[in-house]
Image 1 (cartoon, rainbow, N blue to C red):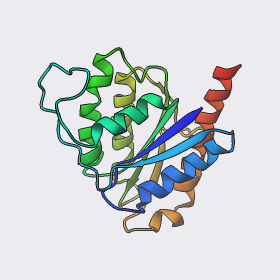
Image 2: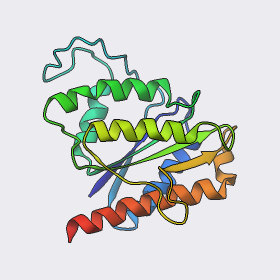
Image 3: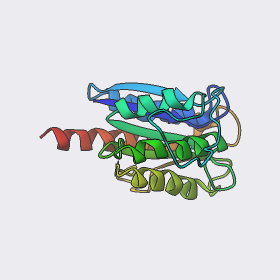
Length: 192
């Protein structure tokens, strides 16, 4: 099994990436291959609503390669910083551009997915951003998991205002790790 970790931050070595790696480290314990797909420095143009979605998108940017990697994955973890109770603009562009995968036969169907959000305060809109990620996954007919016990939330939420502060959020780290464990548990159920 392979799990892709999409990091929606515009910063290198971001809090969102740190937490995605924590989740992926748990997945790796069950002999799964993982890959971080950082959107930092990538060019992902907004969807032009051309309504044709030919085999290849008419836009020539980094989205096509990222979407190809998502098709090849068995699981997807999406991690984002929170911007006004939403995902980053870069990540939203990728979500919109993924319509091509839906129009060509729901190519993300049955992939296992989970969400992570990092906000600047404990109640900084993380759950709303997570719900946006989960809605995207459900539109693609993915199998969605939360962060499991003991928290059993929609996904992993962390509080980190400045770079590197997610490392000090014990609950955020634990919920990210639990998310990775839940994805592994679903993989185990599938393999039975």
